[in-house]
Length: 293
Image 1 (spheres, rainbow, N blue to C red):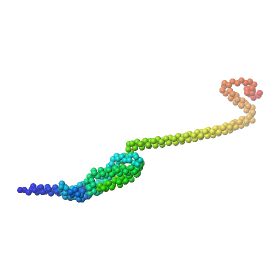
Image 2 (image 1 turned 30 degrees about the vertical axis):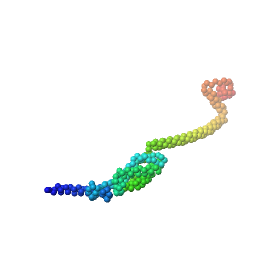
Image 3 (image 1 turned 60 degrees about the vertical axis):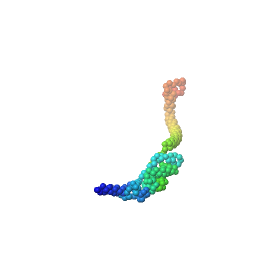
Image 4 (image 1 turned 120 degrees about the vertical axis):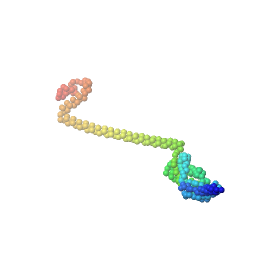
């Protein structure tokens, strides 16, 4: 009887056992080795490792968990700030599995279970931190301080699950629709009030400028009228002086000139009717060029 089949079976069994006793851990993983459900050891470094075969009989099993930074997002969370107004907030945290053994004991090595618990704590921390801030502080430089507070509040819960919270970030803080409308209406009212104040100040300034301009016009006109009267008086005085000098030099010519001026003034429109005696003094230069009576 040939022994070859038996040898082949033995080789197959040994190959199966050999393959089941080896496992590989890459640089982004950690391995938890359990025996009959009890944690025996953790392999945090990448490499090739050995274990007892026959996982079917729970002799030794290997559970692979993440050894990298993992991001957990919270989107469109409605939070209330001090004063009663609301924001819509998007935030995320970054964590890693820092204690694989504790992580396995508390969550059975399930990221879904771990993230559900951390998410609840993260949500509550965000609400508490925003609730301590007023409407404007949530959008100011205090945001960095708020992220640190949220991280510090979430860490104890995460540490109890074998996780380490590396960072917390608030990506978006927007007003809710109703608060946005209220804020818009308030800002609109403030701008309208400011516009009314500016218009009132402009009108007041315009009235002051107009009053000053009117006063200056009156002062200028009064000064011009005064200067005109002075010049007119000076002209009259100079004219009278010239007339007096002319009279003293040639009284007969002065009388003739005055009479001609009187004729011109009386007859300048060409339609004047005068009823006078031809022998009156008014016409003496018509009767005699020398003006003798």
